[in-house]
Length: 378
Ligand code: GDP
Ligand code: MN
Image (tube, protein in one colour):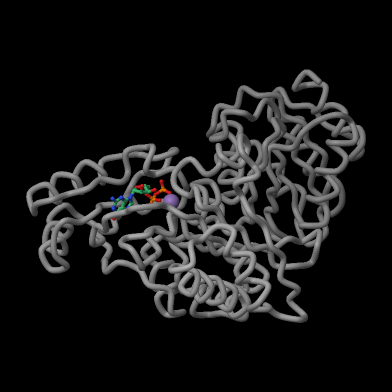
C-alpha cells in the first residue's frame, strides 16, 4: 500500500525526521489560506501516488498568496500519469543548497534491509542509477542483529560531509525504526535537502507498506485513500469481486481464487497472457457477472475473454444467464470462450446454446484455454 506525501511527512516527523511545515489542501482557496498561515514562500505539490511529479509540472514555487492560489489551481487541474490531482501539499519552501537521497527498503533475496544513499539526489535519481551507478551507495542491515551505528556512520561518510553526518545518521536510524515498526517495504526521502551550512531536512517523503503487515497496523490501514486502487479495482470492490489487473490480453472471469490461479497458469501454459485475475466468488449474481464483464472490457488491451466456472455452490445456469445478459448489455464484440462445469451445467449449456450469441464453448479447462489463446491470435 502506498500513502501520499502529506501522510508520509507526518510519519517521518513522528519518527524524529525534520520536515518543513506544511498542510494538505483540496482547493486553490484552501491552498492560499494555508500559504498565509505557514508563511511565504511556499511550494505547492500535487498529491498523487506516483513519482516524477516535479517533471510533470506538479511542483510549483509560490512567493505570494496570489501565486499560491494560482499554482494550486493549475496543479489541481492536472492529470499526472492518468491520475487526476485532487489534493495539493502546501509546504514552506526551503532554499535547497544540495539534494541528497536517502532510503531504506527490503531486499527479499538477501533477507536484509537495504539502505541506499546518494550525494546526487533529486528528480534524476533513476537516470543516475543507470548512468552512474557508482554514485548510488548501498549498505545492508541484518534485521536479526539490527543496525550497527559505527558501520552506518562509516557508510554515510562516503556521501555526507562531516557537519551533516550526525543528522544523516539519526535520519537513517529513524527510517529503519519506522520501517521495522510499521512493516514498510520502502521509506524514501528524495530530496534529503541541505538548506544551510549545517541542516538537512526531508523535502519529499515516500512510504510504501507491505500489505501482509497491514492487519497488524490499523493506524496505517486508516491512511488508505481511494486512489490506492485502480479504477477497475474500485469498481470490482463495489461489485463484491476480487480483481487484480495484469499485463496480458486475455480477460478471465472465474469463480474461486484457486480456480482463478489455475486458469491463469493454463493460459500461460498454452502461450497466452492473462489480462487480469478476477474471482466472482462462490455465489456470483447476474449483476456481478455483468459488472465483471464491464470491468474487463474497460481494459483496452483485452482481445478475448475466457469464462471458467465450476458450479459447486454456484448454479451454472445463473452464470449462463448472467453471461448472456452481460454480452448483450455490453454489446461484446471480442471472442468469448466459456467453460462451465458442475451444478446444473446442462441447463447452463442450454441457456448459452439458445442465446444465439456467437460464443465458443470449451469442454475442459485445457480445451477452453487453447481456444481463447488461439482466438487472440497467439
Ligand atoms: P517528485 O518529483 O515527485 O519526486 O517531487 P519532489 O517533492 O521531490 O519535488 C521535485 C523537486 O522540486 C525537488 O527535487 C526539488 O528540486 C524541488 N523542490 C521541492 N520542494 C522544494 C522547496 O521547498 N524548495 C526548492 N527550492 N525546491 C523544491
Ligand atoms: Mn522526490
